[in-house]
Image (cartoon, rainbow, N blue to C red):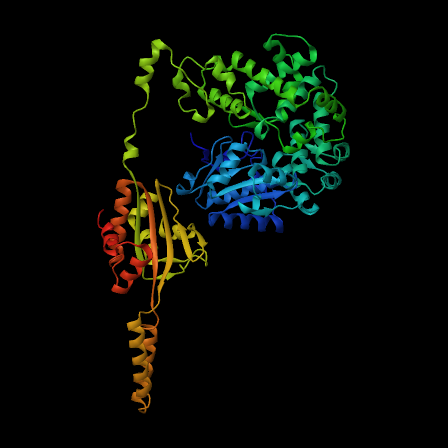
Length: 618
């Protein structure tokens, strides 16, 4: 199973069911101050160099919003982006495909996925984290985050920019903002952009079209107290307020605070049974709760059959960190239900959801997402104990890491075996090749990063019709998106490619001291040059020329730029590219001179003639 899900459009990131829980118009209405402009540029540059980026900041400063702008900019530049699938092992397959990975709130990532970042060192990953959770992230990673990521800091925002956000968001939602109300809201925001978004969202859900001074005065100061106030306005004195709170509090146990819709309903039913001490038909419980329906309006709708808390600050409130009207009841529930009790309630709910909904569903995507979430919280045995669905074919694509055995019945075993996929011919048609060449030129291209150096071999590759055809990228774009990294005296270039091919070029400098014979001959020639300089004019010119020539050739030693090319992809595509590059070089890739041959022999311990022949095997 893949460890990422490709985003086909920036619109998938935002909106009611977007991955990032942001308004659909964020791209048009994002407000840049100096800090955010600089942060955006830094993040883009790091990603272009193939590095990983961690956007950090206090809760509510707009890390996720900045992440959305970075991803949108990358997509506009031609990069593909993909969301990391939590719980999967991150590898490096995405790099050759030119895909940038992202993950919002990385301290909440499954430990298995986090450890794979340390072990496999994937590049081109951008994530977010609260500053206050960096110690937790360091503990999970086993090393400092800045040893893996380039850190980009998002600071709190000045009031004039918050005022602009309020004005822009309100206009997009059709809300009139009274000037005196705007001043009050901005001051209460405490320099946090997320507070402004929560005010707008609250107005929209409560169907208000005017932000007046009365509303502004009633909302509390600070994000946590505001969320507490929203929860109070929903549950109030409702008969089922405690089971609703208990349901929301159970969501804080879920990775990314995301809960499958069937699991959410089952948690509410189990919470009602715990609070009321009675069992009732699920239909009556769910359809009879207006409080549950109201709270769903505030929850974010995740793309895959799930609900999410609107913001991390909601989790803070539900974990007892606020001082608002509901803080007392939340504290009581935390006392009565320690973490072990919450997990037991969640387990019972998972069992109920499976029995009453999942086992009867015909939607494989709905089933698959439920299984993924249940496995992430460690309840995969719920599935394996009961079996899954009568058609094993529905779940063929589920990751082997879920450890869910789909056992064929004895009578059906032969039929299931017949349906197993045959070995793919595609795997046999793939190849990996390493070739060596000598670069006759190393230079900076006219466009792109001024620190980037390419060779005549690089130019032959990116100018070839094979590269343009198989990687769907032209020469100019290739240079602008070329990833490079300096490793000691070596320069490593990673070619951008949107096709099924990976190309890496490593440039090394080979040097050799002049031989004893050359040194002796050089000394003799220099002495002759000095003697010639005793002759006026002509002798002086010839003597100087001889000395310079000797110093630049015989006494300088041998120096060469060795290129190591690593190519992988479809066999026919790789071979076609090699043939065209060989033609475009218009020279032997390696056998340039006797001195170079000897230099390569000493550096690689290989026969240069054999290395040259490898270019002609395709």
